[in-house]
Length: 185
Image (tube, rainbow, N blue to C red):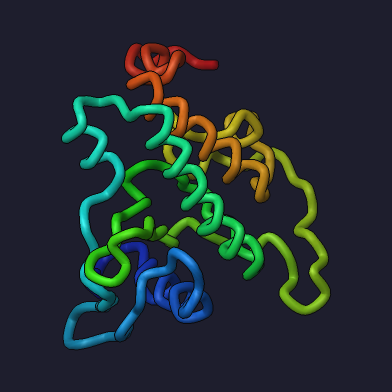
């Protein structure tokens, strides 16, 4: 739900992405997206906990086996997402949700508000390289190229996934104290 008077309207944009991805591996079912009264709404299937919530419940550490199983499921999600010409640009544990019911054995990817096309869907021509970009996504999981201000691509989603998997194995990231203390990279 998003107020119409809010400065940034992302929900309808996000709904268009969900619509284009429907039926794909790891994509929640969207039932409806639109405006009602003074609000934009996005209605999707009921989902379980996100991976950060599960991680905290498990004492801030997953076993190697669990991390590898998570990696396998998320790689399938990202493969489909990238196949459909999108990059996510905000890979983090909070954006991966456990399915429920018939989808209880799946991890679903959510939050497409920062996502964008990385190639033309007809010609498959990749977006041009650019620098001078502002950091988009979550700082702790952002790729090195993202921190350097380069245009993001599929590799940046994969690099962010690697950082997330390290976090699950170690319980923290080696650079997190720099973020907390405000140091630059």
